[in-house]
Image (cartoon, rainbow, N blue to C red; front, side, top):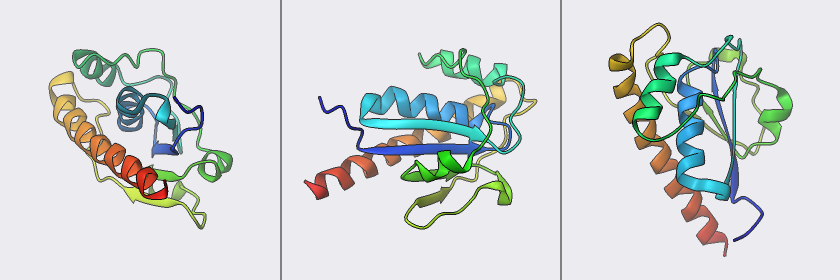
Length: 141
């Protein structure tokens, strides 16, 4: 197994407490060490949304130890893919990065029943992202 990841991905949302944490959990689970995973928020919350933690636990992914982190310029510069989920204009833009904006409902303040469809949409998008990263790596071989 190669020790160099194929790509680095940064997920960004406002509080880094729900959508970006679920996306990071799925990407780490699906891609393993093939992809370096980061997440951050423009105004990080105090903790990861308990409903997001519960919804992820239902699909066998534990994000209970994750902590919201502040978005830094260094994190954006160090990432090949920057995926925003409603962080507005707070996300700095650098040339050479692949930016994707995923319009996803904010799970803040919602129960686990309302978070499940958001979780499932994130999983679908992360699976497509993994396929794109793998295809890009194969095309460079």
